[in-house]
Length: 92
Image 1 (cartoon, rainbow, N blue to C red):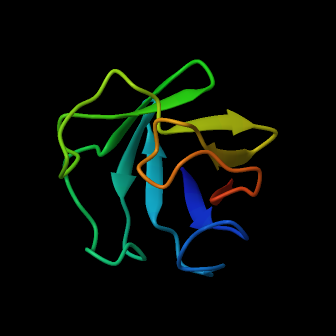
Image 2 (cartoon, rainbow, N blue to C red; image 1 turned 30 degrees about the vertical axis):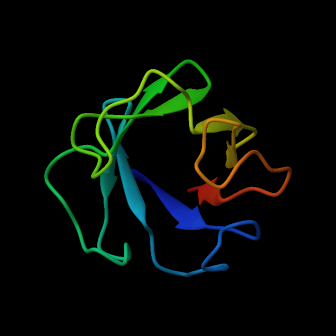
């Protein structure tokens, strides 16, 4: 199973603990997430875009919060913190 680890652009900084687990094109909060692991997916991956899913605390959205490129996850304009050029997550 692949996991998403906070990277250079993440507001909390780089972390050796995974914040999300990737299963079936969905991202579930993992043991390293500040709110702990969860059973409901917080994000859904469609192509190279990442959208909040029904399990996200803010609810489901049709606006992408992130994009995936070369094994990294970057914030998009739809992200509450805005778009950015530094990756928030590394997929490993």
